[in-house]
View 1 (cartoon, rainbow, N blue to C red):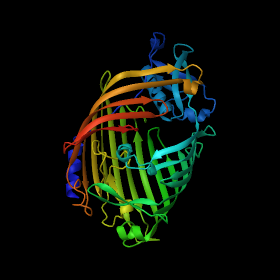
View 2 (spheres, one colour):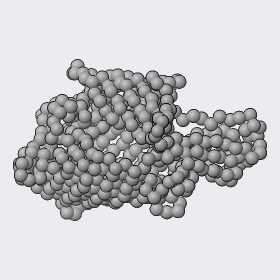
View 3 (cartoon, one colour):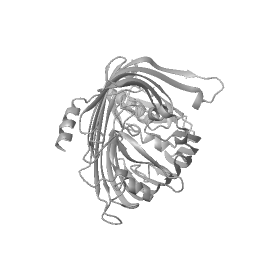
View 4 (cartoon, helix red, strand yellow):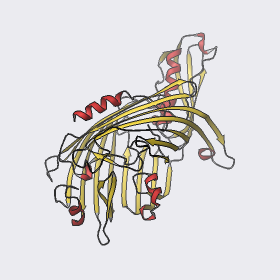
Length: 474
């Protein structure tokens, strides 16, 4: 633990910032607007919201009818309100105009272009650590296929309905329903999630920082039924509190238990447990998809096992902080740190922390996993806006799809990480010492949260490669 704390202190020096695709234009004050320094918001007019209820839009604004603001406060409120609306992921474009009734009273006109909200999409995805790991083998048996239906902005109230039926490497059935606003004050939200997963092949351990796989030709190597209820409380625009209760049933075959007796609990083939968690998030980024300015902070406490159903008792602490700065026109600095700590010694392999899974990893180590109990990760990136956000119109398409934007960013980056592992070391040699990687990258960012990153990076062992990713790195 001491080594982890020391590593985290080192990582704190790596704090920095990251970028977004689409810069928000600040409100430009006319000569008539500047004639008087105070403005009274007379009326708010919203157009273009064919689906979204007006109260959902008003919830994101930094002002309301009847407010009296100085010109500077008015300008800041309009700029931030535009960011808030775009960060709901309900709109592709938001334009604010001001019509002066007289030198003091002003009407605000908000013109919105809504996104397409219903996505019945076929599933064709890779079930691996990341795309680069899969691309080495091109193993088609690790492909998942099926149908995924997501209805964003369900009933026009920012609700979300998710239905999934997936087959292939992993069989999954899922339903999730999110209601962000239960009360008239629009502060309390609810989410319900039920999913069933099964697979005949499973990673039962890691060796030499690669996952070891077992495939059962007759039975399900792993089955899971998960049910959760979450309550959210958004008392302020940027701050959200989330409390979740989950019940999970997990089953493995005798063969998996023999290969790793601590996959669940010692020599167990089933593990049922409750999980409770609390999470606080403060999100002040100008874009959740690809930020250029602002900050992000998240802290969570999770308890697996409540002293009933099983002997499992495991506690996780997770802290994440990010900062985004415009250094000068077209140059952006981004950085972040993340720490994940588990003080317990009875961590089942199923719930073990690790780097290299999904987007939680260190760049240039895409081919490795680093399992452990305590993790620190720091990332730093400097970007140049190679192609400015560029709106385009395609003839023959509706406004929701025919009007889109894109941008390119060229960057250099450096990552550093430390994983403390009390169980798998020295079989996994990358644990218990600082790892680092550097590289250059080119990012393409477009609407509907599309991000495609091509990065050439190398690690401290001199290994290098070209890697593809499909989410923002920080």
